[in-house]
Structure formats: C-alpha cells, structure tokens
Length: 205
Image (cartoon, rainbow, N blue to C red; front, top):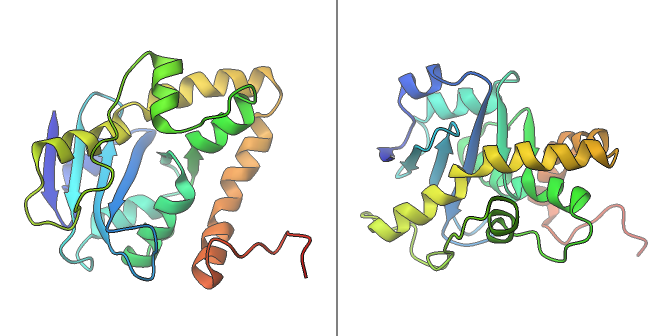
C-alpha cells in the first residue's frame, strides 16, 4: 500500500523500524541551491511505501531524528544526491548509510548500467517505469502515477541490498563498499560547498 503524509512521518512508523529503512527523494530538479526538496519516500521492505510531501521543513522532527539515528541503516539508490537534499533542506545529516548504486558498481563490474531500473530488472526480474521522472513534484496534488513511481523507488531496495551484499562478499569488496558509504557524508558537504563537479582528488590544477 501507498500512504501519503504531509511534512513529516507519523511517529508510529518510526517506532516500527527495527533495523533498516529504504529512503528516496523527489525534487524540482538536480541543482540543490535552486531546486527544492518536494517529497521523501520511505519503506521498511514490507511492500508498503510512505510518501512525505513537503510544504515546509521545520516540523519534520521524526524524519530528522530518523536520519540522525546511528543504529538504523538507511538504504538509498544514489545516496549522494538524496542525502545532500535532505541535509540542505531538513538540516539533518544521514548516518549509517547503504547505497545500492555504489554497491552495484563495485559488485556488478561486468555491467555498464547501474540505474534502479536496470538493477530491478536484472537482479529481481521486476520491471519498473521511470516515465514520471521529469514531472512537477512540487504540485499540491500528486497524481496516482506519481505516487506509484515514487513508491517503486523504495519498495525494492531491501531486496537489492541483500542480493548485492552476496556478490560484494564473494568478490571481497564488502569492506571497500562500506568505506565508500562512510565517505558519503564528506562527499555531500563537498558537493554543497562547491558543486558536484568539484573534485579535490582530480589530477588537474
């Protein structure tokens, strides 16, 4: 089922979290200094998705506490962007992170594509649609198609993590992946400081 909330998660949802939660975001665009956070999606991997539509950010106490909780694992796909938007607009840095995109790039080195669509299709045999990617996520009333699209971005992340972990351990790259996840907080702060194209590790002057 898909549940829609305004500005924050219900306290009972946060209380039901045992070990991990899948998270995604929808924004007005891909530039954090210009494009605002519109929606955040959450799933416990139980087939339900909770969507939080933002009209203001200050009251998102339950989400902020969840993001900062070091015990709960947060599973993203392309965590770098989602964590950045959540940090910029909610002011809470996400702790204890797993990124299926990073995990895919370290484990599926035979593959050229690492999108959520590609992972769901190859690993889970699930076809998801990305037709609603470029729609107005800032609108007051989300369409049923937008809700379904947003839900799909979190419903399969727990399963993907489980399958990707098997390959990461098999190939001896699990610890390397974890170090990459731990670095995301620093990477996000660099992105917000100077933009995604700023790379202090590059060879250029």
